[in-house]
Length: 479
Image (cartoon, rainbow, N blue to C red; front, side, top):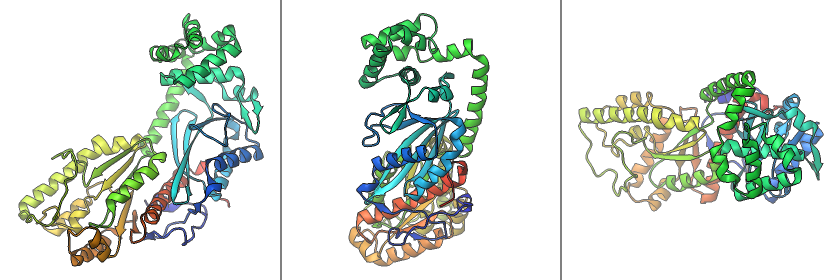
């Protein structure tokens, strides 16, 4: 997390009234106000399109523009002129100052970026995806040059949209790349072919499919059988690219290799460990975080204490008395602990790293540090220095959320441990974890919604700072 502290531009100030989570290190604060109905999704898009026009950005909305900004049915795809790319930093900075925080950037193809913006509507975190395309590549084939697409764009109410020909080319290329089409998308393709006329549609399709396949695809669009056909022809754009555009395909392949290397260096996934004594509210918090944060990630994965590749368990057992079993001997405890470290290593390679490379959110309920805080729970009877040393060999989570509450309140929630033991563990967690830059303490004494908002605010703050550090080209520091 050292890199996240190194943001080189000023950030908006977070007011103490709206962010009560206790920070253990000084971090630049970000605007995390609780927004009401005025800051809903329609407001985000209304502001976005206004700013695009104000800054003279040449763009067009590639699909589902009929109800924007009042209603958004899916992620919004925008084609933007490559020469206007640098203007987006100021626009994103202004959106941030309005409270719409950019928290994710997935460079999923050459010249194509998937952004996620988040904000609070009351105590609930809202997220919206924004897909921006500077080069339109599908299955190794560039069907549309963005510059030409924008030269043919037309005005629709307050938005810019593609010409009829480009609408069909874009939708057909995207559905072919995905290998499927919903009933609504199939109906859209049929409508476009009918409006274009069959000869014009076949000419466009011939840029994607070889030989007679362009006619078959257009016929399938007209008779409504396009969905099963798409599964059969997914690889055809690659064939067309190899035969007709080998030099462009080579450039695309090099660009893809560079993109993948960057994604491996800075994966978009995120690992959170939620720790705290029994009764601090871990189960409730994790359930809420999975729901609140899912919009910023492809999937959410959860683990209990360790990855469980060694000594696997189908689910976390219910423990009525975590201190009932006696500690193992020092030698046996050390062997077990080494096995647990090995489990973390294997799980890291086989599960955790692939998950974060695939832009997943990984949440741990407890973590290896619990051995140092509560050795009796894991029946550890070895030397404390061994546990501390081995903890340094385990992957450090991107963020550690330490849940804390009054020990008497925790005891009323779960009467598994004494008040004295809960008090001891609260201090032990602080002694073990507060030295780590990635630790944040969240009080759970108040009502659940407020505590969840505090924790979610911390996560969004970390994601924003990571975005600002990794992707400075996308956000302006000017206020």
